[in-house]
Image 1: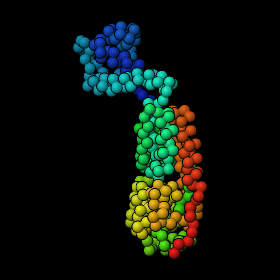
Image 2: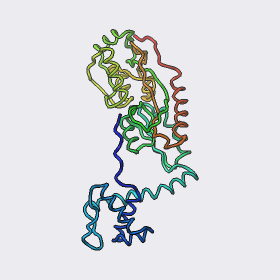
Image 3: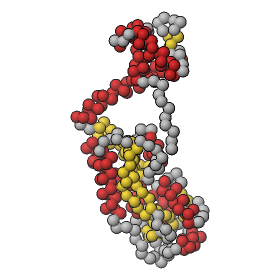
Image 4: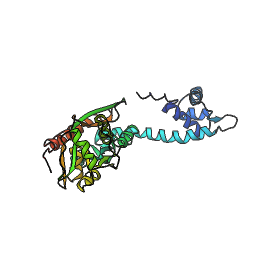
Length: 315
């Protein structure tokens, strides 16, 4: 479980008082500007210095001079206060119309499937729509640091609190073979196949790659790391060009747009093995939007997965 963040040593009001003293040069002038008493101003500054553990003003000169720590805080506090003052106008604008911007991350294997269904809906709720494709791990980091508002992919943030999750689809992993390759029916057959053809891997930087590696270890299959790629197109292209075989998913194959380009997708021998696709957002920050977006994505993915994976023999 991640550690709770340490409490902040200040609040916005104390920063506002600090900036007023910086701008006016004296505690008394700041008190007049903020309609406060001078003792209240002095106490706020003293508590701010105590919480931060640094002196902010050189009190031996008049008007008050800032210390090095005080100068740094003034720069950062000015930005924080300016952004805080923008919140109320933005909220009033949202009440009247749309969000200023919504930023959505899509795992690579969902880009072709979901970009067009989601983009028109997002345009009805936000003035600016940003849809970014990439690895789930990158999207997860951007969600936690507020560079994204939500992402759709393989959830690797189960240990984090303060998030809401909406399951979109569960799809089986499948075996991807060059056309004409004899289809393995057992794990022993799969092991034999790996002696004839290299495994084209999804990168271990991706959740899909990590899940496949873990499954192979459970099966006791040690396969050389000959090739690995970050995206479904590269993996499927290598198989289509008879450079090896892969473990993939129906949506990954669809994303590559190479389903009819010399590859066969069939059932993976051994125990069933699947991945779950999830929409993840910060808890209750976007109202009904994550739920509505997940329902739309769920319907789209259900239609795409309804045909399943071909299990016909080749070779």
